Image 1 (spheres, helix red, strand yellow):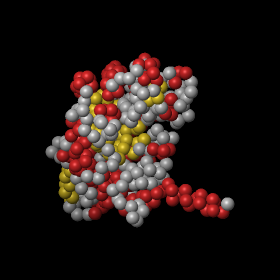
Image 2 (spheres, helix red, strand yellow):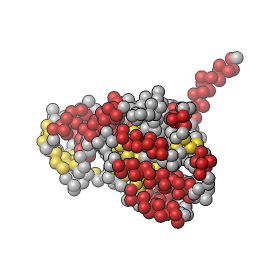
Image 3 (cartoon, helix red, strand yellow):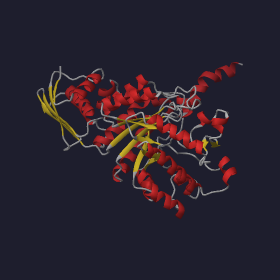
Image 4 (cartoon, one colour):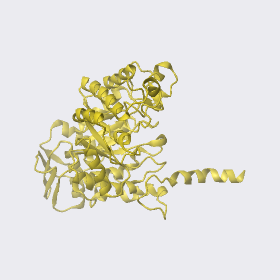
Length: 457
């Protein structure tokens, strides 16, 4: 049995929880915390010295040690993480809510990979007191369930962060045709800015989240393309919609301040509303009145530049330069592609991760979020993108993929090469590898099961 010295009781308990995933032989490991490197492991002949910088990095260090001991010989490992925070966000808003037991399994794997943060994306899949239609028949988390997930993440010194929506992407809520819901609606899935009952709803969101220990939250606000063009337009006339976004953001930040939260938000709407053609990846001209608001708000919110598509470092660099016109408090969100049908595309996720990582390092980004969206009903399994998660972990800690296969084997018990064969339904022979959003898995599936039926009839 492995013998550790220098561990706290909490760390000992966490390692015990991970013994079902990794095993260490009969060795002695002296553990200390040091800021000389994120992870350092040295030793041979059954005697090893392991150091870690941040508490969550201890568990990646254990995984690295297990891999090295399996291979035999003298152990000399040193890693320096490029990012202060490496985050995985699981989408739980597409009729596929991750249950508590599965969330705990995900947390264990993320801990071994070296992630600092676990996020759940919840549009309406958490309960709000006094809002019976919010999360109705959607498998919404209770406050107690969220607390249980957070407590498990904290066992491994990981931070739990809720990702919510405070403007758009609330179609599952606003679909209910009752007065108390419809009076909150602007158009489509967008809330009515300026309506006081909307801010009562948002206050209720934060009241629920305040039962957690975390005081970090992503408030969403992405893809609100028609904001101000529905009931708001009828009630108030034409306004500068970039200014309207700023006014709403300020109200939401005031509510967040009331509960002690620091907010992140997806950045796209500022660019879409201020660019000439309404696109995200464009240069922007910021109106003076909007600039005044942005200057006032930029220190209160972290902008998340999300990009799941670019296959060259320069494309990311250009978009980082555009973001710096608005704020220098930036995080980056890349994609683990599990939203194009029944199977993922870890191959494309690897391609874009390599380029995004170069740009994030060049632009001194401190937080990288890997998103596991589940568009169109959560058809792809939550754990299908484990290779993509390991890829980002390797890029963060070692800036290469030389040890990807060995580390994935330790953390999952599986061959990464075999696992990535799950992508095959999306990898047609003549399909360029740098194309995104191509999903032959869907129409091949439909062909197999339905064409014969149609032919026979």
